[in-house]
Amino acid sequence: MSAREDILKAVTANKPSLVELPVIDASKVIQYSDPVQQFKTVLQSIGGTAIEITDLDSLKKELEAKKTAGEMVVNRIAELGVQDDSIAALTATGLAAVEMAYLKATLGVAENGSVWLYESQMGNRLLPFICQHLIIVIERNSIVTTMHHAYKQIDTAKEGFGVFLAGPSKTADIEQSLVIGAHGARSLIVYII
Image (cartoon, rainbow, N blue to C red):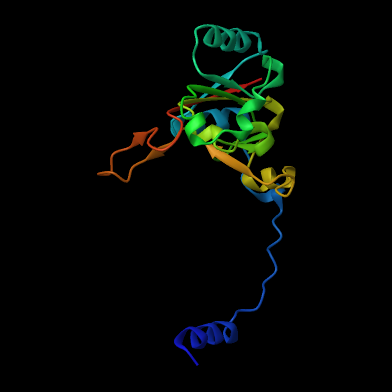
């Protein structure tokens, strides 16, 4: 027998038994008196910005102005106008010039300031990570308290890809200095309707 076969045999023989996942009572986990305010506070602390708005009119005008000015802007929100569906087949090279992307999130999580995006909302799974600036729209009543609540509301098997995204890209690996936008979007604004 080879060393590889010996190792695989030992691993198989010492495989731990399966353990049932714990049942978590979501009513007993942390609660916030104002989940929207908690979401905004946490998002700001991780480098993002949250802005409450009453409708999408100002955002629609901003998007149109940027497109008119010739900026490379991708819209994936139907309420803001024509969605850019042509990005689905683009590679990283084709998406590298995207200055700003507009996406609509399914839900937000107050405890960590993250939002859940399905691949269909992104149009291309690279988009939220390769654009320079990311704009996300979320309904106020879609902000849940914790990740426990979030997982009860999303269907992780619905599509081939989905992601919890929290704040703009950041790293502190280099000389322990915080760098925003090192390997993804340089800014994130979440508009709460």
